[in-house]
Length: 331
Image 1: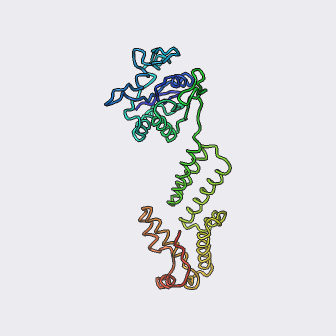
Image 2: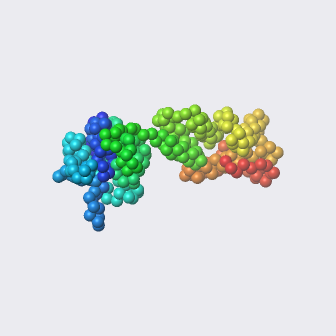
Image 3: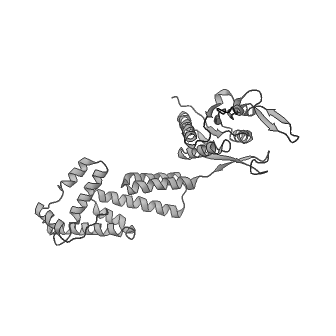
């Protein structure tokens, strides 16, 4: 697929009134436009909005104040679009969210690959509620700006002609909630590398407030601390996680137990008396192996189960497992 240069690409849903579509096209002056319009009805033959895009014989019907019907040219004629400046996607099932979303999402993805450096805008003013919602959701998922045509309202159905104007709408809260769920999921699944990457990506993409920043920092730091723990750098893990000890007291007790037991071993340079102290290092190694198995890292898990990194005779391990010590099964 050959990439092309365009400064601005507009995605727009088309409803029964072409005015908002014409308004947004004229305002944005996009070099390429993708229309999402309804197909003709079936089995009941009702005209679809696709005719309003580029249909012949003045497809746009306007009811005048005197009750007469005036027929006007298509959107393409009104805006002076050439055939190479637009394309039309006909939506056959306008009330199916799944179908509308899938159709619109795939088309936006194709166009983005064609014009990767363009400024992408999605106007969801027209079309059925389902079509507009599908375009908005797909746009948010793909990082496309959202636009809406507003104006002074005559009633709840339409705005007063001549008062239409376009505004970019913000979906930051919805996007923030979506990313936050991803961050929480990666953290609870112990995918600490992904958790840190997601946090860094959110910080680069959004202007966040101080409360959101503190939450992101907590996830980032705790992911970094538990990642250090996973690589047996217990001292670094303790240094990082101590800031959050009131939220994870059971982990900090366990980590402190591990470090103290390791310190005894290093100080005496001999086998620690686990039966009188703690089996925390052995338990930590086994839990680490369990996490490796759960992540599908079987070679790493088997290596940890072998206890090759602990200088503890089998008798001592069996003895400490039977001792009345505290177990921390949660980590």
